[in-house]
Image 1: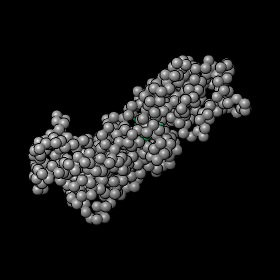
Image 2: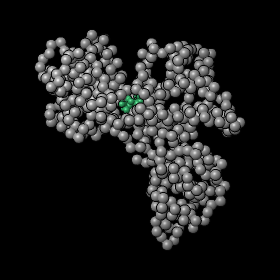
Image 3: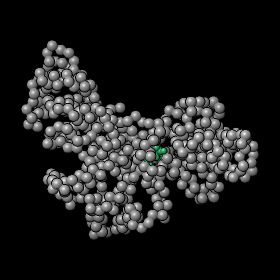
Length: 497
Ligand SMILES: Nc1ncnc2c1ncn2[C@@H]1O[C@H](COP(=O)(O)OP(=O)(O)O)[C@@H](O)[C@H]1O
Ligand SMILES: [Mg+2]
């Protein structure tokens, strides 16, 4: 997967340089251990928030604003609505800032978990079937971190309760377990046992697992079904995966009352342990949560921002965020982190320019709502905080003529028709770019030695030939990384457009 760049402080002396960054998609970690860093556990659903949030809180404000905007109808009011939407000014309005931060906070449960309806319905159908037939069963959910698994389980829980209410079906006892919080892996069995037989004295000689196995092997009249939602199942992986096997096998015992929903980040775990379970006649249904695509990320972000009565992001800015996050990992937590950080950039940017009295005259006036919106460069700077890439870092710190040459190479290879070229042809593109930016080009010999330097750095490959002009040049890094690294400088941006 290509590394890619975002904006970060450009070290060259070029006055046109702006803030820029570097990004390398990090390998997806099997466990969402960044959860803690990025956010706290899910807050209450908006339904619950309605009851518990005090008036005047950001959420209450969002709702109030939304309500008032939705109540508007007729043309004069419509005009008012559009004016209201434009009145976004986070520099002066702390309430707006807090409202946006909350809407984009990873711990704020969204009203709708869009783009996961299909997965949620499949999980819900599975649960309904088990509950209706009073039959134990197991389901295994897997997907990379930040793909909405935990969120979807929360939604399914609520939907199942609503359904049970409507259908007058007995709702099972729900036991949510985050496996990361277990001091000991086997504690999962004591928790299930406690849920099934609350307060019953435990035998010291037999383990909780054995007691559960006994319990589910004989009929116990009146014992309720329980729905175990075991999240972060990865923490129960042992070399022989015995705990996981024992857990899933509980659902196959003749009088088992356990509906098990196991949620894991490791996608390959299923391949490793499900065949063994199958051979033991335990066949959990498997649902995979794929990484979010660019369009899904845009959709989710727009949905989360919909409740706000103002437009916070320029569409291109949201798109850049979604494109980069989708290309890196499809992790929604990262997309939210980038958006929140971009808002900080916007606020920092405007504070700085007003302090220095250096408002950029090319940008729209400060009181224009568009100037208050998050732009591509804010998102690019935010991406740099969330991701890092040595490739882009290197390109960012190259001397200007080497950057111009890379910019020319990107133009030349654009469209993917050509994979390599000659130094002579590259020189033509290079001279053209120099002319358009009024920078005097270096000669072909110097260009050839610049290519050698870039070859040493692994950025391109320079072939052998007696005639310099005929030496073959191939890019060794992704063109997108070059574009990303250079897009913070206005003249490169224009030239690459
Ligand atoms: N479909 C979605 N709609 C809105 N927000 C989402 C969606 N998917 C993920 N998120 C946000 O990303 C956060 C991380 O998702 P989570 O369900 O914890 O991922 P996972 O459990 O797969 O690691 C959620 O708390 C939520 O704020
Ligand atoms: Mg999770």
